[in-house]
Every structure is written in structure tokens, then in C-alpha cells.
Image 1: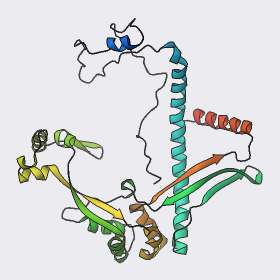
Image 2: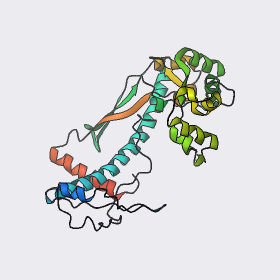
Image 3: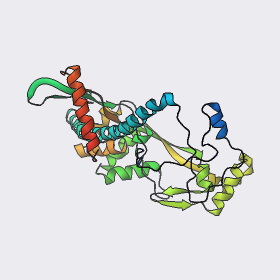
Image 4: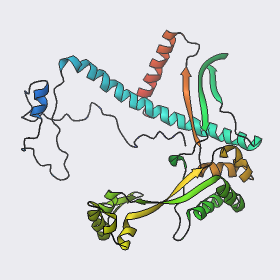
Length: 308
């Protein structure tokens, strides 16, 4: 996976096709400036939202001085979201391919490769540099890049991780040695999210409603004092999660725990270092005018292509 720069999945940019909200009677003709927001204040007469319906938002007339700025903002914001999605998808594709090559080099030479530059020449002009970027692998393993398995009942997180690695083809002896020497795991007690206890939680695509016992504990947590909960109730509140730390310098030692390239890739699928493509440059031999024209062409291609 590329660097953890996740954006909310499924978010859609606003478009001109979305229906405009009507202006409540109390706001129509409201004066500009501070008085406008006084008119939007809660005077106790607000309509109660019907269940299942979205409440209408009041409209604020834009001051004439910022109308053009608003137009620039909306246009550039919508375009930026499309462009960023294209960049994220394209970076992920390049990152996967180059990370595979990087792992092959690690396995071949048994030492961490130097982060490479990625370069392209102008079409039909060999030797005339046009684009470049850097591929970076960092000696960091963040929470989002460590993909721990769910232990079976009565199974430790260490045993579950060994099981996962062996299922992915890593010999059991190598998997056990890697975890023992390179990864620190310890259980950490914490409180479950209050909303989970009161309402429920997501399990895959299904929402599991909170049990009566969970809801009862949630009500006590509102005025939570540790000694007020019985041991049975604490079991509903306290959860144990593994705190996993990968030792520094492990990247260059991964081949020690592998007998084949596939074993290296399996370990990195579970314990993935931060890696990404960045510092992109375009038109290294273009004039400023040529670069502007190319950027216009790229923007036009992105806007006219639904497959970002």
C-alpha cells in the first residue's frame, strides 16, 4: 500500500446538478453582515426535522465582493478533487509495480536498496528528460501499514500472525524467528468506543446493534467511575488490542527470514514499510508556455475521462 494518506472513500464532489436549497422566510431579504447571522439564530421556532428527512439549510446571500472568489473556489475545488483522485489511483498503480521491483532487489542483494528515481524522456527524443519522481521506502511501519490477523478464540496474536504468514507460504520456523527477533507485541487494555456500546458497531458490511447489556454499561459510562462497574461489566467495556512495534533496520534483515522472494513479499504484506511515489516533476525541458499548454491538456483529459 502506498503511504497512508487515505481520503474518505466514496466522497463525491458537489455538482451544479444538485438541487438548490430554498431560503427560509425569516432569511429572505435579511441584511448583509452580522445581522444576517442574527436572523439565522435559533429563536426557538425551528422546525423539528422529520425522521428520515434531511433538514433544509438556510441560504446565506454572498456579499458581492466575494462572488468571484466563490466561483473560483467551487470550480477549483471540484477540479482538485477529480485531479487528486486521478493522482492517487495512478500513484497506487506505479507504487505497486515499483515496490515489486524493490522487493526483488532486496531479495537478490540481501540488503536494503537505495530509493530510486523514476524518469522518463520526451516521446521520440531519447536523452531529453521530461518527467521524474522519487520512489521512497522508509524504515517506518505505521499502524495503517501493519495488517494483523484476528486471533481465533484462545489464540494469541503471535500465534495468529505465525499462522497467517505460514498460510501465505512463509516456513513456520522463519515466521516464528522473524516475530521473535524483529517485532514487539504486547496487549493493551482500553475502553471500547462509547457509541459502540450505546448503538452498535459495524462488522464487515453489516451493522450489529448493541446488546441490552452493552447499552446498560454505556449509560453508566456517562458518569463513569472505575469502581462503579462490576467485573462482569468491565468485560463488556475493556478490550485488549495488540500494540505492535517493528524494530528499526528490519528491512535489510527480512531476507534472513525468507527462503524465496515470495516469502519476502508475504512478510511485507503483513508488515509493510511506508512506501510511496513523490516529488513529481513535469516538463523538465519545456518552456513555461509549453508547460502551461501541457497542463491544460492533462486537465482536459482528466475532465473528459470518467475513468480517473
